[in-house]
Length: 69
Length: 372
Image (cartoon, rainbow over all chains, first blue to last red; front, top):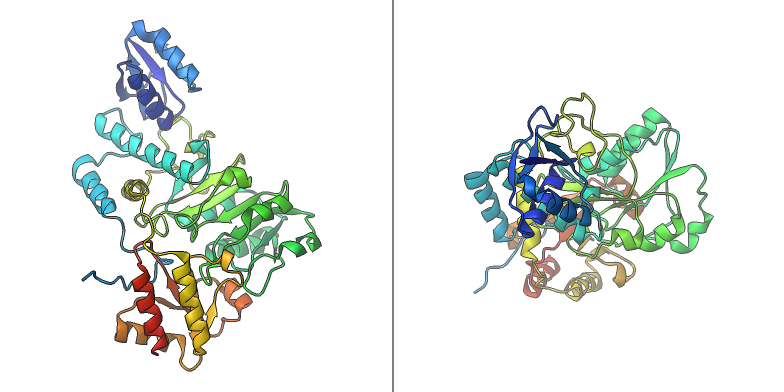
């Protein structure tokens, strides 16, 4: 799995809508302390969809960072 | 027979609301209840989504292509304070229209006393509309902000915003849209304005507790500091918008209600001509002095009157006791406007309209006033 981190909750909402609208299944979870100091949300996606996510998010100018373990 | 709408105090707060507002609020409280951005569970996600959808709709309504430049506040007063305290106006000059509300004038005067700020009034016509032809007489030196009440809460004058900004050039212009949002087209980008203050519970028909501020590209110091759910390991506010200016839990119930009101897209059941006809009838009766725009093109959905024989308090009491009409009387939290219109002594009786008013409602109001 990969974790997609965004600058704020608005970006999470927009990203989730875009990804699910393009057939990418996501799960929203509370941001784990080891990857974000945010007390908000991050999106979790299948690792195999990493490139697809990147394309969708960059095409829509949504900045994000990936955490992977 | 259709029930008459006798509530004419929509400039204070709108009534009725679209039924979807109560439904959405009840649904949120009963079935959703999550808060903004605090948690990864579905309830929080849905609540966060509702806030962002509302932000998107508001941005679209005011002609803003980047919704992150819109922040939510508890209302227009908090938005005005966020702007005035956040801009850093120390030792600067501020120009205002003569029809500003105390939501602007009280924080501005507070800052003037504390931070060596000077304010002065733009040249204007007898109805308080800015006199565009005399703007070139005004010195722009040291001016850091121009504030314009888009629609007066006293006489309903619509100010020529785009032309004022054209004159202002690089000087930032802030618009108080408390009485115009929902009634008139607002286009912050084509007007090139820098700040827009709005409230959700007047012309936008939402519940009290919602409002906000559009900020073009300026960095404001936050008025309120606190949790945002971002950069939570730091004891200072984040600098990215909208979080930088949205500390604390947002007014979820009010935002949910505002979203429902905006989605309802209520169309007026009367025309501006119906209001202009009322103004003309009252004026021609010889009984009333009517406070309205000199130019009918600049008349919005409210105006005010005084009666030649009875006080404003007596007039308001009579229209309520005899005809059931609810309206505002006295001073309207706008002493600067009262000063300029000569109504400081006892104020006015204000009639302000809702999209739910019909032509017949307005005729009933006119006939009631004419019978006094």
